[in-house]
Amino acid sequence: MIEMNDLPASYVEYLLSLEEHHAAMVLPVMRESVAEGTHGVHVRGLGGHSEQAYVDETVPFGHVKVTVT
Image 1 (cartoon, rainbow, N blue to C red):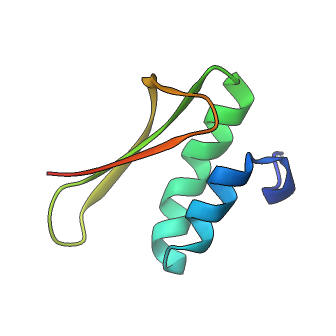
Image 2 (image 1 turned 90 degrees about the vertical axis):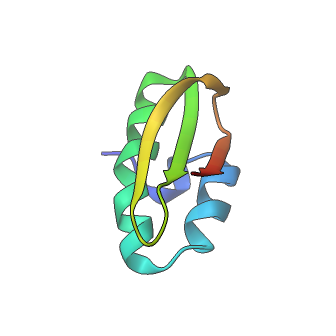
């Protein structure tokens, strides 16, 4: 299992900026990104408290892209 210290610094920094329930939603996607090692994470806000996080081939590995729709 991938631990926090195995994540890129930008992932850890982003997680630390979130409330616990949001971090719990994003962390599995970050672990998937690290396991694959090729693409970064995109967090898309859909307004209100609804968010999606996914590994995005347009985001460089180790980076987090945040968009609000």
